[in-house]
Length: 378
Image (cartoon, rainbow, N blue to C red):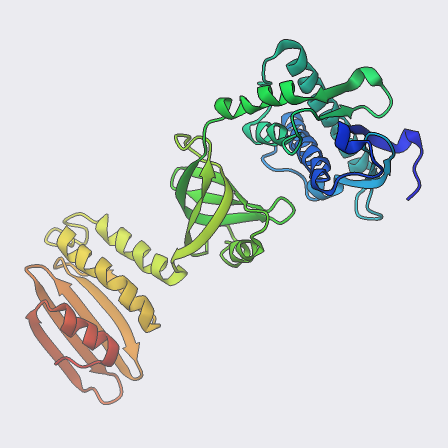
């Protein structure tokens, strides 16, 4: 790829004895990647700041920052880098906006590093995510080495990251709260493949969850558990890190676990049970009784077993304070009433032969489970 001086995205020069030889030491090439990551993090901040009504980046924003090395000049290692625009993938309008933001981010990073060298104070105008990325710039260098970076054409818009500046950068760790590991429970309602993130609907609101970049298996899991209608999906437990666990809508990063904890079927049965729990006495007339907490507790304990059976089971109340499980086994209509006073009533009614079997007994979970699984009342 040929490029003129006008095309370079940034000036970048490594100084020190190790860099006097031709080329660039392999163990310091990562500094270009750290610089790219810091610029991209700041660019993300700038875009979100300029679009306060948006909660996530536009598709392709991260991928469009395709910074490429085309040469390493002799003397002090000076990698030449250009911003490559993928052909046919980004509209002219988006490219004009995004490339401008990338350049602004480069300059904002440069200005902050210049400020550190001048005031000996760490920057405070970046997000925690960006500050972590900035802190890593120059981290592979030896004490006597430095990086000069910034605008490709103006010397005055360049900053030097030497040992003294890196000492100040180390203090950023004290300004950014140590991440806390937390678990969130909810439903995945939106997935953003370009940002490797998803929105989790919890009991308190919506949380943004960003996946560990190398965990593509979790991206598959997030899409598998996604509620395409915003509602119908398993409940999941998401584990990751957050700088502030006290927020109402905690945002997670470095998500490294997504586990389904309640299937759609189990949620449906729990929803039916919750509606029953909300009943009060006289719900079906002056003498009707609402099921007690103890009756509802017994049913809730059975729900995982009901789901495991793979049968369609309805949960309904009756006017005598019982909760009745109803299902069908072939020609036989089955029901089990968990009643007050620790009672259990079982019924099997063959709709073809009119054969009816009933049993009234003290509540016994083992007998009830056997009836559910096989139809036996013994």
